[in-house]
Length: 271
Image 1 (cartoon, helix red, strand yellow):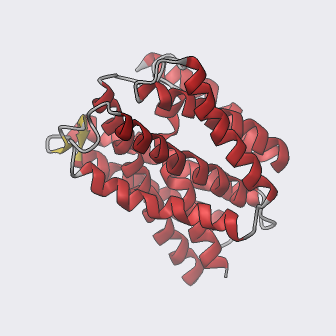
Image 2 (cartoon, helix red, strand yellow):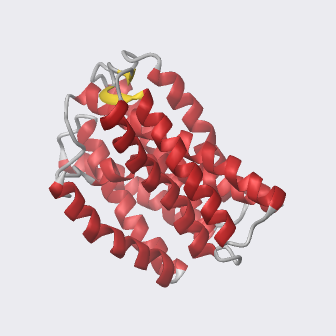
């Protein structure tokens, strides 16, 4: 826990400064590199051993992200974000069928590569859609990420204190329903405070509150889905990049699920 806390204290200020003070183009480059590193870790969890093949998968994702950046704001851009929203109910259904895709066959690896695309690329598009918006984009970006970060802390604290009933014991034995309730409660508080500080009152504030809850629920599915893939791969973490925190994908699994929902919901509420 001490190592996890120290790592978080180092990473959090860097992440916040990047969100608030870096122009969207540079933000796209930095986050693109981070997200592609997560894809590199994803290929490891799929059992790919050949570095050239893993690099080709990462390069294909990078090419897709560059192409989408040139089309940002257009139909293809939004189609990818909405595909990311639609992907998470599919992933939730997969969670109910633990054994699906578990065998390391070529078809299953290809399926999981596609799952990695729908996990990471729409999240990157959603992140940049919010960050580049004219109406306090960086602050709305930080707001969305804070919901996920606080939910993660709330889940840990509530689960460690009151957790008895397991949420998905075959997938992630340490997660409990108390953790889910703690995540929702903590993010609800942040949702109300954040919306208030951004000047929302009445129905707009209520709309953001509902969106915040949906975003956090998606983040829980994202966390569980990575745990499912790790169980299939029989690995504890996606990597060892961060002491006490595992790999990049371990740090971003909830964020990947939350961002398309947050971006699409904000666009709908502002329409």
